[in-house]
Amino acid sequence: MRIRLRPLSLTLTGLLIGCAYYNGLYNANRLAGEADRAEREGRVGEARSLWAQAAVKAESVATRYPDSRHRDDALLLWGRGLAHAGDCRRAVGPLGFAVDSSPDAGLRRVARLLLADCRLLLRQPSQAIIAVEPLLADSDSAVVQEALRFRGSAHLAAGDAERAVAQVPLETGGLELARAYTAHGALDRAVGTLQARASGAYRESEWRTALDELGARSPDRAAAVVDRLVARTDLTPGQRARVLAADAERRWERGDLAAAVQRYREVESVAADSAEGGVARSYLAVAALRMLADLQELPAVEAQLADASRGGGTASRVVQPARDVAQAARMVLEDPTLPARDLKLFVVGEMLRDSLDAPNPATALFLAIAAQHPNSRFAPKALLAAAMLDPSRADSVREVLQVRYPYSPYTMVLHGEAGTQFAALEDSLRVLLQLERQRLAVGRSPAAAEAELRRDRRPNR
Image (tube, rainbow, N blue to C red):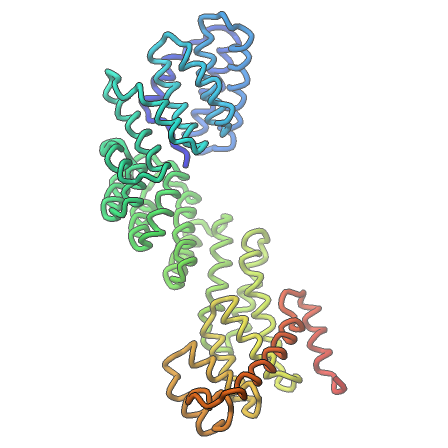
């Protein structure tokens, strides 16, 4: 989590080091101003580079002129530049020197707040508390509020949500207070706090952290906050897409496929040509396979998967496992004369069920085995697998098993009568299935897959 200084702290810094003392410090301040502007405009990479350059200039002044009356200003800018450039491990040195050596109370305030920020990022909450403790008695109430916010964040980082809730200021606590409420289990208060801050300063990484933590406890509450957040008119399409995509990802990981699909459609709508839009299309294609109910539509879904993978990168990695299984299913389904086709259908059904969490097409394949290969040893097993995926079929499956396969160990096991026959058959089929999984062309190129199936079609096999 990146905790940024409030406007008060930035203003103090500006007053303290805004003057151009001599060439080195002047250049450092100029670079810092450009970096600050780049940050406000969302040019994160450029801002980091400028902050790093400002830190180098300030370091030169601080080390070359140790007796200068401007050394403390240089130390502060050196530490601030490193902190904003993402190098807190190096920033704590000059910031600590500024805290210890400067006679200027205002400069020490800013250095302490920056130092606390870095200690939190370095996962040193106790050190963050030490950094801001003297500020709790400051005459400036705004500084006290800032110090309380950092102390509450430190308690939260240390896992003490109860103390964090008690100490983060309600007025200025912002996302840290919401995170503390979430960790403490006060989810409605967390939502209320986030909703109240949804129109304030937008710091993307902090919002992502707060929403991820709330979403882990209550996906619906997090989604409601997302709806409020993306309604802002000042977010760029990319920012809006990333907020929606993160919510979709949370839903996907929890198995809420319908809600995830809705979010990914929103991502594609707001930023179709972005990287997030490409990833959204890949998840939508995978979802189309997972929700497929009619095997006649498999070629269209396979084409959708192929189209989604064309952008490469993350989108291709998301799609590829589903594309491999869809390809295997299509090649087995399109040739009724394929040797050991019942075995291949069962393996692909298992892949859909176990690897892709796609119960609909898996059920359809298991039922296809019983319909197209009624004399197969796998038919009773396939019927039971279909009934387990779709409990509404349990009665009809039981009836088919009793009428068509009364002496199958899979029918007898329903009545507790199979005994060793069932175990022996399961062992035998398990070996066959394992061999077929190894032979099936999942994960290979289309050409290699086609070659494998052509070998299967040879009559002398």
